Image 1 (cartoon, rainbow, N blue to C red):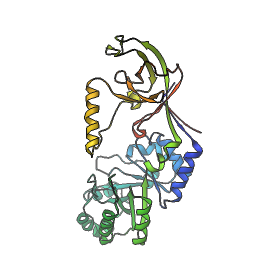
Image 2: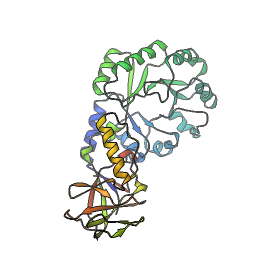
Image 3: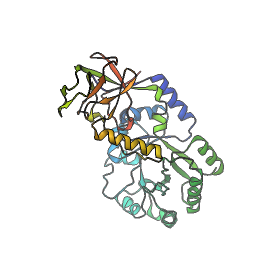
Image 4: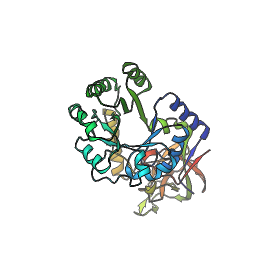
Length: 349
């Protein structure tokens, strides 16, 4: 049996429709593992929502998305001369490139005359993008260079607080550039922020790029479960596992589906902002050093400890004496990071 994502289809679809209805110009984001659902599934669902454009993360993701979505394909990773963009002419016409450095635009248009592109303006995230001065300097050359400008892209950080003041400043820079496009592709704005910007900049068209809030916005529609593969009674001191550890107390050893091949036990660095967060990290580091780490699996109402680091496709858990013991074949709830988990099965009702 497998690590499975079960989706309450009616509830999920209701959420997707609600987001689309309140987000004019919506650009669904499909990238990576497709937020746990898979790129192919989200590509079809974006078409079902009536989206005219989707955003992918990489050029390498285009072959999986393009056959399943009929519209335009915005590539979020900025174009560089070493990228291999689509060779198929029909697909190339649907692709919108992101250009984040002035020197890349002539190179792109030399390789692919008539290419469609957005110009990315740097934000406080400071990942990719031109400065306002670079954008202004490039603007007079756009008609000479050719191609088809589809607008300006802004990628905002996931910071605490609102983005309104920063976006207003950036949009002032966009207006001052006097570009031959009035479209702005933007991420991570609230509904209220978008409404306010549309009222203040009525001559601009906002295209909100949305991924997590769209696909994962109603977590109650999603359930991740693992299968109990084996159950072994343990006495204190009994050896177990690859590393020959010994049981710290009486209880049971559970073997469950889901391991490192699924992303279980792999953790991204966390941005710790407060003293409490840092204290938790220190405490967790001490537990890790002692060979103790919490798993994402829940048994008898509690999150249980890994018995040892996860294996490739299975994990071993310690269940103390007195806890309810599941049987082989039972399903356990798991709480995982969807964008970092590869499920064996995705079942949408």
